[in-house]
Length: 290
Image 1 (cartoon, rainbow, N blue to C red):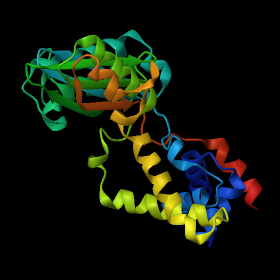
Image 2 (cartoon, rainbow, N blue to C red):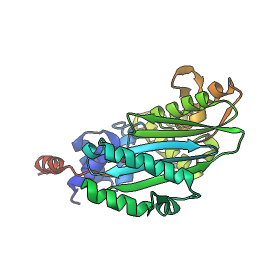
Image 3 (cartoon, one colour):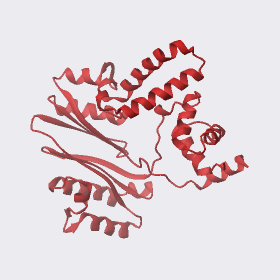
Image 4 (cartoon, one colour):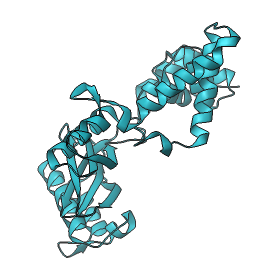
């Protein structure tokens, strides 16, 4: 089957594998992107689980809290230039303050919140006209905590990544350190019992094929797979990860030193899942695939 340049690019962005390896993987899997990711991992060409699988768009994320209420959100623009101007920065601050002052609990409700006499969605449309680029309030997560819990907020690289954590016990400094870890390491789950059986079964199958393709004897493969699977599960769960500021401690043990435990976390990174145009890449691929 004919392999599209865009599909090769998507696979390369997901895995970091070479262009021709990506093309071969897509051919072997009849163009199925997810199966191609597994194919590359099984062949040892790509460690996809450790690669960022998202393409950055522009804009800013932010996190704010007031009392027992917090919001973490993303406002997108078309260019990084606009995201850096004061008008855009002021707007993202106004959006967060308005949501916190409202009773909104969902993204849809947040768009209807009053912001200086206008609905939020109307305010963003007006700002689009003034700034000259399409602006989108893409994601909003509103979180509430109990009075004996603590929020931790962290914003990285001027708003490229925002993280929010909730601790039972502890203090704001400890919670902020957890959020800093979340921003840096990007855990997928809080703890292993949150991981679905489907995810575990899929990872086990990929690891088994990877071991077999490495030439490992059949009789030791299953034991190897379980060892690698347990390591994988620890790597993607926040409480089991080595704490970024002190790798001798897990995150769980770090917060225990303050008599706390992690209850929940949220992390947003600008442009997750949004594909930017890349005019030159298509030509590059076509020239090498002809």
